[in-house]
Every structure is written in C-alpha cells, then in structure tokens.
Image 1 (cartoon, protein in one colour):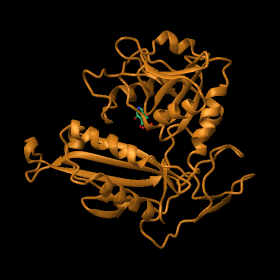
Image 2 (cartoon, rainbow, N blue to C red):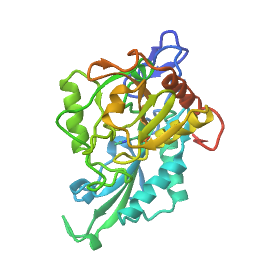
Image 3 (cartoon, rainbow, N blue to C red):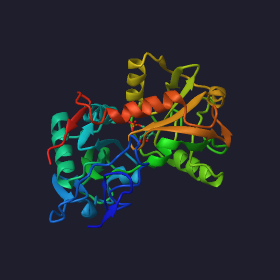
Length: 338
Ligand SMILES: Cc1ncc(COP(=O)(O)O)c(C=O)c1O
C-alpha cells in the first residue's frame, strides 16, 4: 500500500486516486485516516451477486440479464462517509418503490437488503464508499429468454471507493455548466423519473456537449423548456433567498430531500415546482446536488456568471451543513461495523 503525505491535512492518503482524491485542505470534505488490511480479498471493494459476497474486481453478471439488454431495472446509490452509511432506509424505500412500479420482485425484504448492504461495506473496509444496489428483471433458463414471466429477478449490490460526480475541489470552489442545445431530458411520459434508471442517452449526449463547449457538466431542460436535471444530479436554484427545484421530469433525489430539510431548519423556504429556463439563468445561486458529490455550487452557466460567479452564501451554508450531517449522531446515519 502506498502512503503519501497529504500536505497540510493530518490525513494519510491510501492508494491515491483509487481510494481517495485530493480534497482542499481545511475544507468540510476530508477522508478518514485509515489503512486497508490487504490480507482480505475484499479490501477496497466488495460485491454481492446471486447470494454470494465477491471481491469487487471479480464481480460479474450474466450478459443475458435484461437489466443489461433492455435497461430493465432500477437502482440506487447510497454513500458511506467516515464509516457511516447515509439515509440507507430512504435509499431502500426508493429502490423498492421503483421495483414495485416496474413489477420487479427484489426477493428480499428491506431489512435483509440493509444487512447485505452493510456487510458489503464492512467487507470492503471502506470508510468512504459509493454503494450501488440494483434490481434487474434478470434472465431465464433459456439463453436470451424474452418472456418476462420466465425471468428470475436479480439483486446486485456493491461497495467501492467513493466516486465523485464533482471532485471535492469543485464542490468547494464551484463548477461550470451549460444548457445543452441539442438534447432534452426524456419526459415523465416516456421514462418515469421517480424510478431511478439507466436511461442515460440524453444525459450522456449532454455531457459530451458540455465537454465540447468547455464546461464541466450540463443542465437539461424538458420538452416544456422547464429545468429537468443533469447527468447524475438534481438542480436547485436560489432566488431572493428562496430555494426551488423541478417537481417533474427529475429524480426525487435523496440529496435534494436533505438540502430541503437543511433549508427548512435554517428557516429558508424551499419549493418543488416548475422552474423555467428563464429562472435558471436569472438565479442568484445554482447548485448541483447528488449522493456522489454532495452540494456543488455552479458558478457559470453557458459561460456567464451566476450571481457574482462565486459560490453563493446559501449554497455554501447548505453544503457545509450537509457534510456536517455525516458525523452527527442522528437517524440519518448508521455506523458500519468493520
Ligand atoms: C439523473 C439523476 N438525477 C438526480 C440524482 C441525484 O439523486 P440522489 O441525491 O438520490 O443521489 C441522480 C443520482 O445519481 C441521478 O442519476
């Protein structure tokens, strides 16, 4: 294992780039100080596939799973920070609700899935982890079986080192976005956004367009020119001291729910409603919010500054409060037993 000096922080970097990324010194985002016991094959990543725990690098599923072939699945991504899993119950509720809407049977009760998930994290030893749970339509006895009644639904779970939708430095100093010219987010009449899904065709096209235009990410509009969401995140606007976020054509994100709860505790009004493109460009502050990236200020949109082009005060206060929640004993977090 490689140990590097983490500069001014007291943290030890374990396998830089794989287990952790640089975080701004003194910021609210700091990794735990620990080392993996590499004598375990699960150290650094574990999966649960067809009833067995497997080291993450050996995790493979059938090519005949219709989750792969037809994206016939739902999933969630939870996270572990400082050895605490965040809002696992909410993630499981969303996953099981989505599965029920798709007529998928996970075959496990909520508390059983919770235990398997925590065991995966525990085996991985990761104190900061990206935890994916997926329920697929599965596959049948006959190769390539398409008869939906003959498929055995599957559950796959894995815990790997934290993945950032926005690197920690962007979360502290802000990032850039464009509104794509060439693609819109699929409407709820096509893909139900309340079921977390891998229909990412529009989001991926938007990501490429953002890259072509020199921005980090994209905020997609829906067919009515209202804000939908971005590749892997919800959008929250701040205007005149109030928060708003799209009520339709966007995933009901668990980070956004947390942001709204934090706003409520701070006495800030927060509303789910239609947010027009006009409101997006006229916002005082913009934030991208997601499990794999917390609360990231968006400093510029289409190359123009949002507010004064720096992370805004409400975004910063909410971001800092969000990360504080990862350590404070509350029903939102549950310590993993390692
Ligand atoms: C399309 C999309 N919207 C929003 C989000 C944010 O959801 P959450 O806060 O539950 O991670 C995600 C997360 O992956 C996403 O993929």
